[in-house]
Image 1 (cartoon, helix red, strand yellow):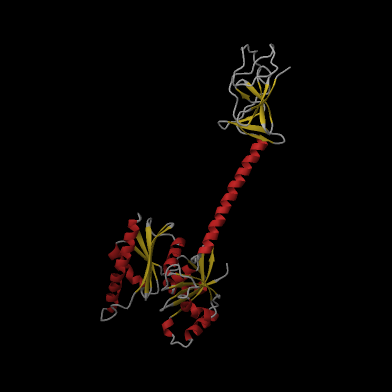
Image 2: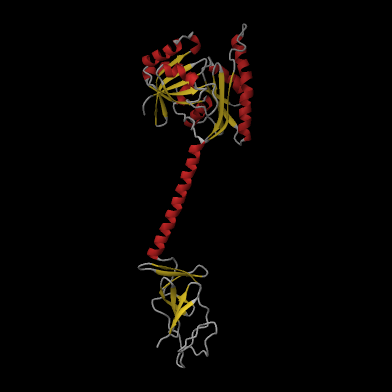
Length: 401
């Protein structure tokens, strides 16, 4: 796969990494971190980005993790274009924009969870925090917000005071995420942190004491593939580039307008209808080619003993030439023929009750001897042939001479 410039962009940071994704692994070849606030304006920030791209040989193809935009934001949105303008003007081709929560969820998919339940993933930057809770295959919680990480950074015990002030601001948000996960049926049993906050590992013990769960900091190269010449540089920046690297494998939002959605639904309906028709056509072909299943035919008609009934039933047609030696027709009701199906080598009919009959089948004491497009011909034990049309109507009676 071609290399991608993975970027994490906000008001206080611009982390860039030259990456390649192979078989789900993120290979990191170079990293650069810029502070946008260090450039006074007048195009100096754009010039620095252009210089960094050329010096570090960063690809133009770029995927951006962008802070301060709503979920589902696209690079084409009017609110997004000004934020990525410095990258575009510096020669980067931004092909997708995702939020920090999207990137954290992608990171959770490729990295083995610490515990057996849900895991809370937190990106802690100097000016913003993103939190997601993920269990295998499902996102349970997602939230990001701005904050001031310099709070408490005064006095002789500034570092210690700031550390616990940050934990005091973080813990309510993390506890809310843990509550939502527990309400969804999966308690959180591990927390993983990353971000560009200095001395991020110092928050580990205070968070463990406050949350009573295991806390891990992604400040190593675990999960990243780095060659020896760049190992020291990448390891130093590991927690600050995690979100950017995750952006390289994050799927961007799918933008659907109503017209495309309706067209997609119509196409789905047409495909389903075509599949149903194809199935019916296959059944009809099999029926004509091999005949209906479960039909038992007799190789020769049954022989019945002569009947000595007196007179034919009044509901049967009488023949005008009946002589004393001719036997009357059976009193058995005639079948109600509902349809006939005739092909070159197959002849079948359906009768009331849904039964399918063919030549050679028996219907009570009668034998099916012929089927044409309009009728079924039945032979009675006396040898008489009764031609029965649709609805059970008698079309003709032929007696043996």
